[in-house]
Amino acid sequence: MERINIVIDDDNAYFVAGLRFSITEYAEKNHKTVSFLSPDDGVQADMVIAASMWRAQRWRKMNPCEAVSAIMTIKEKRVGRVNESESVLYRTDNRSRLFELLAKSLVKNSAEKQLLGYVLTSREKQVIGFLKRGFDQSQTAKLLGINVKTVHSHKRSVMKKLMLNRQREFMYWLISQDD
Image 1 (cartoon, helix red, strand yellow):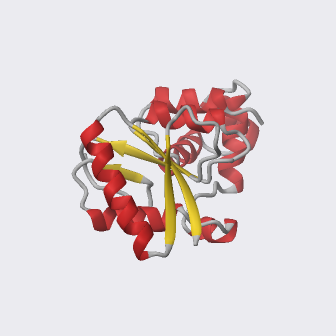
Image 2 (cartoon, one colour; image 1 turned 90 degrees about the horizontal axis):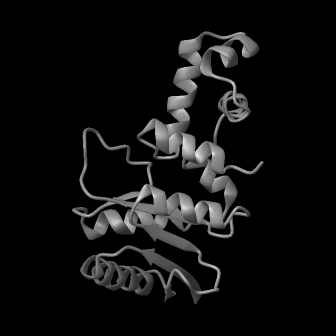
């Protein structure tokens, strides 16, 4: 049986208990064993379920070598249309949605992850590279020979893929990258 190590980083004890119960059921159905770790354990986690974008960013920062293969974010409620490819669990979601997210997030093969949309395009990487070095959007547009609106579009696309909704979240993610 495959073992899955999961950290649930959330302050809502009732929600955590429900998640543990449901994840244990998922593991049994899929012939896996699950170990729930505390955020302070020294054991490598296969998946982290974090209560906020800030906690998810902290986990990404703590694991720069991609030791954690999947990070799922918990959000309070849905606002507007929901992108089904995001690894976001809403507190009001049913167990089938949780099982879907677990199946997607626990994919080990990087080729399969690319098919799920976790990869940035080469142009998005270029734009992010310039923004990370301190260039603003208009300077980035000039250097790449494209329109400022195109730079903004690439930035928004990256934010969507990273499940970042606010400019400050994007800036925090940008400065936390160590490449």
